[in-house]
Every structure is written in structure tokens, then in C-alpha cells.
Length: 116
Length: 112
Image (cartoon, rainbow over all chains, first blue to last red; front, side, top):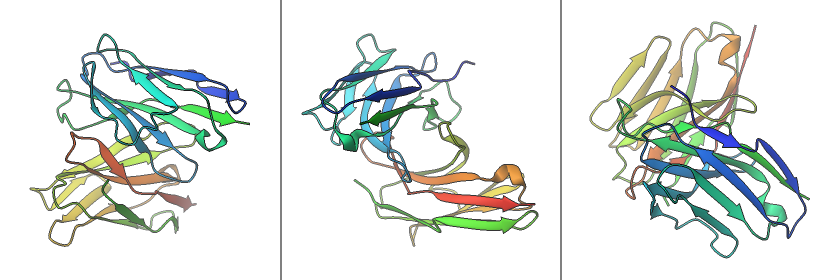
């Protein structure tokens, strides 16, 4: 089966600019996650969707970050305006009952963001 | 959120030796403990996981042990090979709906 798709793979912007990332989860997976991975650290959850509803966005900096999953499939994560400390890899993952283990999260390749 | 501590941060072993990575977690409600392998430029890939009703699980050269009382779990890789070189992350689920809290990672280097 096709894996989690993300685009773009790389993005370089200047601070105060805006940027958007796109994720297409594995077909049939109801749960979608966005994680932020700063260099040398483990992924940190930003937001979790169940279908098109938000389950957990407690760690999302809502003054600058937003995310949506309008039709319960694809998702976009936006940063506006970007700060230097937003430089990181943004990982999308999905999970669902199509997996033998529905906890199992499948990760995409990530988008590496550099803010100058 | 839950705190997951992982040690060591770097580990270098010779090919054929064993490697052990240890993690501790703080939330007694956690029930699911996956281990991910991340190669350069790629997303994390699940290599093995364990649930709280199981003390040990093995898959070929990889094994995971869990001590729920002590809130410890460990990854054991036997007969290491150069292609095992990567960053390994442990994680524990949270009570907010399957989201994972990750450790900071262990960079494993297997030298021929």
C-alpha cells in the first residue's frame, strides 16, 4: 500500500513569511498527526485529527500555527508568520483500523523547514 | 505531556555485538510502547512495539522488554550489522488518544 505522502520535502523561507505543508495519509486511516522534530530531538506532537475533528492541539502554537483536515483525508499545516525557532522537520503520520495494530503510526518522509 | 527519558544518546558497537537502549516514562496510564528507527532524511519507521499486558516481545534480532511497575522499557538488538546504524526513538502513548510522546533518540553506530 502507498505510504504517507508529504510535500514539499524542503522549504527555505525568511522569518515573518508564511509557509504551508501538505499531507496525504494512508488510504482509510482516520487518524492523522502532525509532529515537529527539531534537530537532535524526538518528534513532538503538534496536532491530532480524528477524521476531520481535532482530538488534541494542546501543543500547537495557535498564534502562528494552524492546521485543517476538511474532508477527513488530506491535511495542511500552516505557519504564519514564521520564526527562526520554527526551523525543524515537520512529520505527518497516520493510523487507523486498517492496521493490524491500530495504534501503529506510519510516518511520512517529512518536510524540512529552514527559516532564515 | 508525559516525559519519556532515553539513554544513551549515542552508542557505538562493533558488528556482531549487541546493543541495548533504555527508556523510562512517567505516565502510569501509558499502555503502548513502540520503537522507531530513523535514517537520515527519512521519517521514523516502526521496528517493534509492546503493550502493557506483555513483558517481552521478540522479532528476529530485535527484542523489547517492559517493566510496567518500574516504568522501564528497553530495546535489544543482537548480532548488530552496519545497516542497523541509525537513530532509534522510544515512545509511549498518552491518554489523549494514541498520540505518542517520544524520547530524544539514540544514535547507534555499528562499525564493521
